[in-house]
Amino acid sequence: MIVRQFISWVRTAPAGERAEATRALARAWLISDLSDDDRAAAEGALLMQLDDPSPLVRQAMAEVFSRSTTAPAAIVQALSVDQPSVAVLVLEHSPLLIDADLVDIVATGTCEVQCAVARRARVPVSIAAAIAEVGSAAAALELIENPGADLAPLSWERIVERHGHLAAIRESMLALDDLPAATRSALIGKLSDTLAQFVVAKNWLSADRSGRAVSDARDRSIVNIAARARDDDMRGLVAHLRTTGQLTAGLILRALLSGNHDLFDHALVELSGLPLSRVAALVHDRGGASLPALLTRAGLPKSTFPAFRAALEARDEIGFVGTVGGATRLRRRLVERVLTMCETASTEVSEPLLILLRRFATESAREEARVFCDELVAEAAAEPAYDEVPVCEPEVCEPLAFEYQIDEPEPSEFEPCEPEPFQVESYAIEPCEPERYEPRFDSRREPSFDEPEPCPPRHREPLLSDLLAAA
Image (cartoon, rainbow, N blue to C red; front, side, top):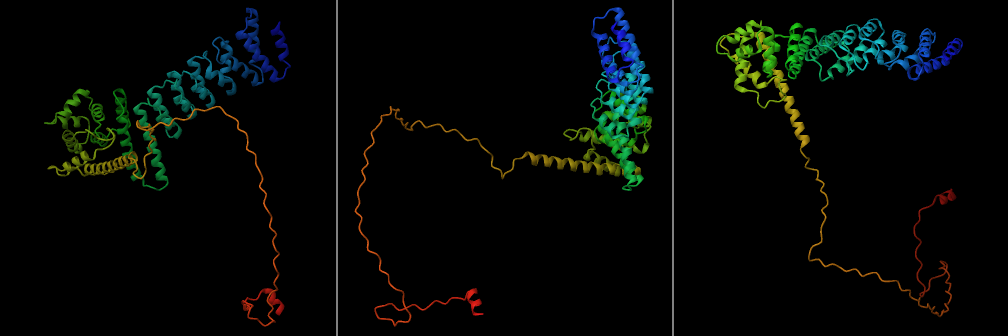
């Protein structure tokens, strides 16, 4: 009976009132004890309201049914494909939507709809892959910042390929601690390319110089990333470097001169196809032709063999104990030792290799100077300033044993005292004679001997009034 009245009333009611009435009916369907007939009638009325011309009515139903696990599935499905202002709540929170439906919605929906799906409490691999493949940059950013999203390595790489040139995407991905090393390396490559294009467009550097600077910076970043990679992460990084053509002899030599033995060994494993134990045995056995055979199988240029042999020999002699910065920067002593051995070798060493080693020597010297200056500044900041007097807490002095203790008198009761009478003394007033008036000295009279001589008049400068009077 109530549903029949509701259906008759909503045909002519205003949009706001229809929305509130629909909200009340949806809540009654969820929490009220309705009979089967009334529940079926209420569901029919709500299904009819999906065709209401006002989006306020459908938004009211979306707000009620978005988080419910017992909502009518047909209504939730219809609301999920409605206009974005209605569908966002359902897409972000409804547990009744299956993964296949969400993947299809991501593929055909707008940016706002994709962002709503990316914000779900749990985003499985399939939905994350769909967003990474066809989603907008805003949806990819929502997916990166969602802790409940499960992204496969291929999805990370796809996001980098499509949106890695955007600063917001790079910053959000690089801030993640569990980001794969291969993805981090790809982001560094995107950033390097962006900076190279910028400086070339500004005419700050030529294309050749910017390319060399970018290559050196990328290699340094790769060694830095590899220093924190282990096991599968390291293997994925090396495979990515080989696929992208970055696993060069210069990078492998830089890793060896930086003390990053893991990257050096895994690079030879990737290039040669031998197991890690076999590669390690061949590297340590440098008495015969083991090392040249390994480097040849790895496809490295023969001109670089003297540098690798000299680096391994210097590594065993010098070691890496007490180095600063871990395996992330070139060691100056090691680089200079290898450069000296190559320059004084009996056989001729290629000039490009010597140029590369000289660049490494310059870079290691500058890096060591920077670290040294940073340490000096840190030590100066830690030392106390001599012109400042340390503030000491005042000491509490206790009385000595031989000091006398003054006994204070005990307070006594107050005794009132009578005031003494005050007597006023009488004084005799003596009469005083009036002073005699003496006339002033008259200059016309002749002075007498009993009168003082008149003083000559003092010189006085004329006043303004005198000057005016004389004029």
